[in-house]
Image (cartoon, helix red, strand yellow):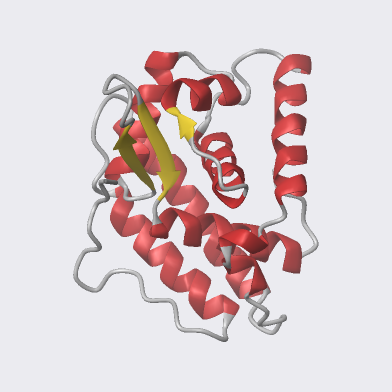
Length: 191
């Protein structure tokens, strides 16, 4: 079945009812996971993901008195249309602006996995790389990194052992759902 990195002792626990507390816990857990980074570009990936955790913490502080609605945490309640719009917007940005300005595909990959999961569909590594607009070798490095962080699970295709399907892990689902919820509560676009 799916492989997933186990939660470390003292890992992520998200108490219901307080968005700021949830995001603080998520940010701490994310930083802990970031230290387990492996492979080429590990420092850049760790730094990028640490910055995302810091941004989540900043948003949590802003939202500390905001709504405590957690409806966005259920994968079936994700705004699939909005996620697809963000992905199209990011592709447009990459096509219109100079190459290399927006070279980090992690968010694209996580959003695509989130949308596919909410739609009840699976995605292969090759399809995910094509969706994110990156080379297969780059995508494999990112998938390995996201899997090492416990954000993505991988399963072999029953019919074709050369093929693997990906899905967000429980931690990955919480991360993306929290990000979408925090952005919506702050009135910010997903970018």
